[in-house]
Structures are given as structure tokens and as C-alpha cells.
Image (tube, rainbow, N blue to C red; front, side, top):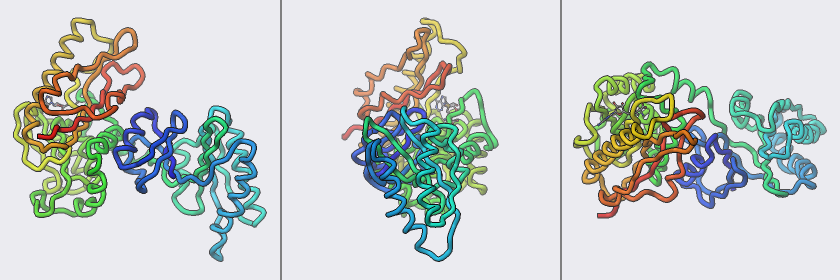
Length: 407
Ligand SMILES: C[S@@+](CC[C@H](N)C(=O)[O-])C[C@H]1O[C@@H](n2cnc3c(N)ncnc32)[C@H](O)[C@@H]1O
């Protein structure tokens, strides 16, 4: 079994795990889950901070003894199976209300003492919090080689699960994809790359593995129209500055972006050129188009998109204004989906970010999706649990996953 440490909004991480083929997904604590399934690449998961492999489960009374046993039976043999001796970097992250930063560090001290007794020198990463931040784990190189180890300790009642971290998100790569790209636009909104990446995963669903395996082929491809070898192609019909397309490209998809605004199509092109460091003309297909009427070039295998969210707001809208905002967004969404339906095959999945507005009472006013049944889409499972809003943000992103009905 494996462990996932979920991001700021754990429900997104759980949805993402299911989408990428994890099975037996079981939340352990509000921000952790165990699962079975494929080896996942942490760099392609937007809403999961760390991954790990479970070493053992125990209880509080036996934790110290079991850590020593793990050091003696597993860690020391692994670290001494070659003649040269490496210095070990060790970190411990605890996910539990009852383990303090000091307690977590002291668990590391127990392992360190066992290793030192066998003349293996260890540097312990200091805990300022019970869990090491992704930046601390990443910058200490934890899990990057066998000599840089992070233990994850998760408490669930009396049961403790101890795992070894196998991957941690790279915060610098996300920051670069967000802030270093040449074209940004505050008015169309700044979709965070992590959220875009999760949307791509939710839209691909079972096609994730195909996209991943075609990644090298795609990125060496010189001809977008080489359909003799059909690659998973993801469409963003409201592509804006291209954040979703960037993430889809990195996940191995062929990418197809359209937007009503020629300026935005230009921004997407510039950002993709920057990302790919070469001409984008071949691997990306970009067009200026109204999503309510356009005929896209087939094939379209998956759609991930953030529809027009309306103007940014600094305070909750009045009742009258809210009615106008909702009506405009519902009309745009309905027109787009009606236009798209005959152009895609049944079972094609869409992950859309649609607007929801914060109200004076702190709740959110969400779009009415009753019309979907009439235009051949089903809302998948629990997808209306995925509301993404930063504190104080008035216009939230409500993620919906739609699946085109069978004919
Ligand atoms: C919320 S932004 C998308 C931002 C995008 N996710 C990004 O990464 O920058 C919505 C986009 O929809 C475009 N748009 C608005 N109405 C449209 C329509 N009818 N058809 C296509 N695009 C439209 C706008 O030009 C804008 O770029």
C-alpha cells in the first residue's frame, strides 16, 4: 500500500488519485490517504504533496521499538550493502494532532542512534513543524536517492502508519511555470498550475496512462497532423494564457487551444514557446474561436478548461448583480456544451472550472446545471465537492467533471 499526503484542499487530491487509477483509496486523516495501484509520478499530480510506501503499522506504545526494528532489519542492511559509506540525511514528518515538532524530531533521533551504532553518520533535518514542508523536503533532496530518507508518520486513533517518502512536489518548478512565463494576465485570472494539472488529470481519467506513455513520443513529434499514430489530444476551448495546455503538454498530451480573443491565443503561443523552448507551431494547435459556435478539428479525446468567469470582484455581488452574472455564465456554458456535444464521442470526459460567487454569509452561489441532462452529459460522481477558493476570493472555481452520454 502507498500513502499520499494531500494538498491544501484534500478533496482535490482524493479526486485526483481516483482519476489516475489508484484503487482502494482510503482517507486516513483529513490530509492523508492510503491507496493501492500504479506507481505514480509526483511531478504529474497537482493536489498531492508527497507520496510514500508503507513500511509498517503499529501503535503508540510500540512505535519506538518498531522504529528500531525497522532500522536494524531494513535500513541498515540496505545502507551497508555496498562497501562505500554515505552520509545519510534523515527527516521525519508527522501527520497527527498529537505529535509535536519536537516529538517528530525525536523519532528521527531514535533511528539516528541505531544507524550511528553501525557507524553510519546521519544528519537529521530539524522540524520547526511536525511535518516538513514540501520546500524543506525538496531542498534537502529527501527521497532523491537511497541516502536521503524521509519517514512519514500518520496517526489515526491508536493506529500509526509509518511510510517512507518516495516523492515530493517540486515547489520551484510550479513557481517557475506560474511566474516566469512571459505572458500573464490578471484580468483573465491566474489559474494556479497545480490546479490546472489536477484538472488535466480529472479530464483524462483512464486516458492518463496512455498520455504518460506517449510523453516522449509527443515531445519529439514534429508533425501535429501525424494522425497515423493517434495520441491523446486535450482541448482547452477557453485557453486564455494557456496554463492548462502547459500542464497537459507536460503530462504527455497533444494540445489544442482555442479562445475568442486573438490576444489570448498569442499569449498562449508565447507561453508554450517558452515552455517548450522551441517553435510551438508543430506540437500545439491554436485557433481564435468562439466556443459557442466553433467546429474543432477532430480528434478530441479530453477537454479541460476554465470558462470565462466574469469580471474579478472585490466584494460579494448584490442580489441583482448576481442574477446577471449567473445568467451570463449559465448561457455561455450551455451554448458551449450544446455546440460541443455532437463533436465528441460518448464517454469523452470534460473537467471544467465554472464560476461560483462568495456571498455575504460566506456561502457560495453556484451555477444551476439542471440543463445538462437535456444536452447529453452526466455529472460524474462526487464532482460537485470540488470548490476551489482562496481566502477572501469572491469568484471561486467550481470544478465539474462531465462525461458525454452514450448515444
Ligand atoms: C478564465 S479565462 C481562462 C484562463 C486560462 N485558464 C488561463 O490559463 O489563462 C477565460 C477565457 O475565455 C475567453 N472567452 C470568453 N468568451 C469566450 C467564448 N465565447 N469562446 C471562447 N473563449 C472565450 C476569454 O478570452 C478568456 O481568455
